[in-house]
Image (cartoon, rainbow, N blue to C red):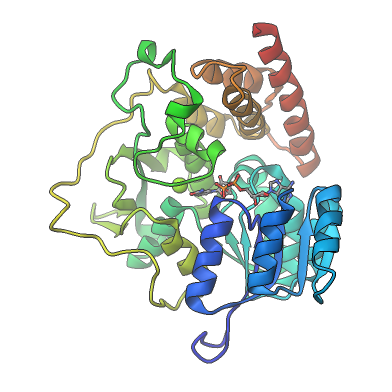
Length: 390
Ligand code: NAD
Ligand code: MG
């Protein structure tokens, strides 16, 4: 890739109206990058605004009627608009970008991600659910597609950066930091009456609603353990989770001599998004600097897996392998949705995820099709379990 100081970086953004998508647009603006493709789920007005600002060649919305509205709204431009899940996949196939940012949430990211790996030079991977569920299959399809994959999730970006501090064969441990979420320090019995509003106020990171609830249950950290196993080809017992309330250390790599290399910075996803886009170059950042005068201490603790059992369960699902991670992730998506619409209590999320994964998950060798059907079955089972509690 030519230096981005010599030519403008071209991007394709999948999930442009979400939390990561909007932060990506802020990075794109700050870098003066070009936008080739913008896609989203259903928010036509927001995507129209982004299209008018960044003038991509192609736009797509997964929702057909929203796509029709967008097509009419953009009739005065040359932007090609696609609609439906197929339309998002077509946009990915026709994309021509140095960096495709995958910020679609959930398994819906799989098909566009595989297409974009053929059409674009690099996948900047924010989505984690697809990696957790379909990991090795998905990663090998991306490799076949020919694109390079750079992680965006802040912990994995930190590990990716820290790995350059030594040889891969000398790595002894990956240390994932966790803020602990808004309910850190509470006992299980104190979590019963948690409301969506309480769960949506994260102490350090500003994220979309589903991942914010996942951070509050520590499911997110469990997903990140599996994400790290897949991305860096390490077993679960080489990964440790450490509570670090300030979210300044974004994660660390320990080598065989017990030396640790870490990446630090303010908790702002734009640093990791930008790094994934410009790697190996570093450009001026839009996130702020760490203010060492204001920061009096960095603290560390051990996660309480009695109060937050989903972290321990994710390690268990990772060890069992097969379709367990896919079933766990799909059940979590349904349970978090029910919690956010006040149909399920906060601690019930734990039970729904475990019960569903135990019913649907199977260990051992799996095909991509097995994973897709485990995902679908887990959604049905989780919904049934939720209904039976109502
Ligand atoms: P979000 O819910 O705010 O945004 C999701 C985006 O995906 C939206 O633009 C939505 O329109 C789009 N989308 C949803 N379904 C779609 C479909 N079927 N087809 C096309 N587009 C669709 O989510 P987010 O917080 O931005 O997170 C995005 C992904 O990045 C998730 O996988 C999340 O786990 C991961 N992630 C997020 C953060 C964060 O700070 N928000 C950090 C690390 C990783
Ligand atoms: Mg993260």
